Structures are given as C-alpha cells and as structure tokens.
Length: 378
Ligand code: SF4
Ligand code: FES
Image 1: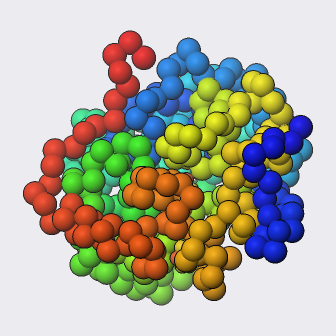
Image 2: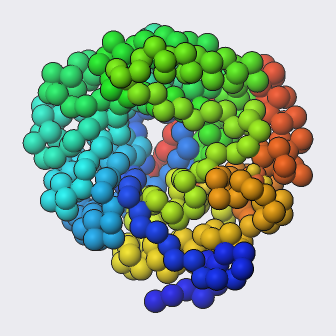
C-alpha cells in the first residue's frame, strides 16, 4: 500500500526507487541504569509495558532479513535491562543477522554474557563516558560505573568477542580524547567510535554543559588524524566531528531512508534515532504494518528521499548527493523546519545564528547536567 503524500522524485520529476537497508538499530528498551546527559533518546521515554515482546522482535528480524538487512545493532537504553535479551538475540541469529550488542556493560553479569555468546551475539560495542572513575561516574550519573565497565571489558576479551569502544565526546571530556584512544587500545578494541555529541533528545537539554568549543573541535580532529596514522592496521577510528564548528553538515544516516532504519522499543519504525523530534511526521508501527511496506511505501520514509524535496541552496549545490542536505532532525531543532537546509551548513541562511549560539553555549559557565531519567512510575 503506497501512502500518498510523499512520492520521492529527482529534480527532473522522475520517480526515485528506494535502495535496500543494510543495518537496523533495534532499540529493545529505553530502560537504562545510566543517566547520561548526552543521550539522544527522546525526552518522553517508552515505558516497559509498551515494549515489543521477544517474539515480536523475532518477526521484525525475519522481515528485516527478507528486506535485505544484514546486521542488527541491539541497543536501548540498556538492552541488558531486558530479562529476555538472550531470546531476542537468538531470534536475530535465527533470522541470519549479524548481531552487534551495544551496551553500557552495566547489569550484564559474566554468566549472562556467556549466555548471550551462545545465543548468537557476534560483536560487542561498549560505551565509555570517561577515562577515570570520577569522570566516568559523574558523566554517566551512576556511581561505580567505571569499575563495572572495566570488569565487563575483561569478560568480553576472555570470551573472545570483537570489541568496539563507543566514546561520546563533548566539552567536559574532550581534553582527554588521547587517553580514551589509549584506553580503547589497552582494552583490546579493534575499533573506537569517537562521536561528538549530537544535540537531539536529552543532549539538547544539556547544550550549555556539553557544547564543545571551536578549539576543542580543532584539537579533536588533529588527535584523531594523528592516532589514525599511529594505529593503522591495529585499531580503526571512526569519527563523528563537531558539526556546529564545521563548514558542511554530515550526511546523516547516509541519507534519509537510504541504508538504515531504527525500530523503537514500542515498534515504531523510524528513519533515524531522533526522527520523532519532527513532530508533524506520522510514523508507522510494526504491530500494524510489515517492515518492507513501511520501508518502501510509507510517507515517513519517502519524505526526504530523492532530491526534489530539497530547498535552496541545496537544490543548486554540488554537494546535494554528498550530504543530502544534512540532518533533518537538526534542521527541525535549529531552523524549526525539517525541510530546511541543515543550519550547520555554511550556506544556510541560519548558519551565522547557529554558530553564534554554539559559541555562546560553549563559552558559558557549564550548566549542571540534566540527567536522562524515566519519569516516576515508568
Ligand atoms: Fe549540503 Fe545543502 Fe549545504 Fe549544499 S547547501 S553543502 S547540499 S547542506
Ligand atoms: Fe534524524 Fe539526522 S538524526 S536525520
């Protein structure tokens, strides 16, 4: 069934056929023992009672594999908060998907990690908030998190999982980026993702605490470049730069509805993790509609495919098939219009204001963290 509102077209008016997704983010829960202020989850978190069951996830994984998905990132919140996580993982493995477990490492015992190994986890991605106990525990809002994470990393190595470290960097930990890269190497990681905080969800509430300075952004680029040379052949460094201080935006999600999709804990299917910030958009749910139909035919996925939807200056820009006009959710947050050129682009009419606001946030006295918490009773 084709929705009617958005039919993707190129600038000549020709219909555009969507490609197939390779990866799916399965947010199996929003529950989490940590309270990181940089979290991109929506401020209105999904309650446990609304979560898909393990069998629901099994159906979604089979539909995803049929659609062409090769890899599932099992994430949250903290996926370990689901008692039936091994069952969910086993369903993903049965569907033939490569399973990447994205975890804080808190709340998963060694026995459970071994059970997850048997169930079919192929790879583990562990988040890191800092390089010392005081720093990691303060940023995560969870006393003792550092010790638990280091113990978890030992088990990952003992069991033999390939390990990626995920480090979200921001104003309050960027000075220690070289140490984070060293730590990832010591932990035996094959890869580290250095992701500058993106201001969606809870992170947007914490702009004055987290916005990096322009000098920090420049330093981070240099540190990453140097480390990539030093670690070539030993550890890969993926880097998401601070785009408020960049000339052009990032190609968010590699282009809307092009290579990946997210399924939220309640089964809502999203083109990206922050899509629900686009408040006028209606999103489909796997409880009501099959995944391939949602991917191919829904208005939400078709809204920003092709190039015909693009505004100026993107339409006349030679980078429109490089960055696809940037991030739709950032355009919504900064310009109040998800169809606008991403305002972090130097060609956007909002750019000067956005940079001035980012500079002001970065120079202000750092505000106290607003920690990510579920409302009481959730
Ligand atoms: Fe990208 Fe649009 Fe900026 Fe060109 S004008 S660089 S397409 S965001
Ligand atoms: Fe939604 Fe970038 S986070 S398009």
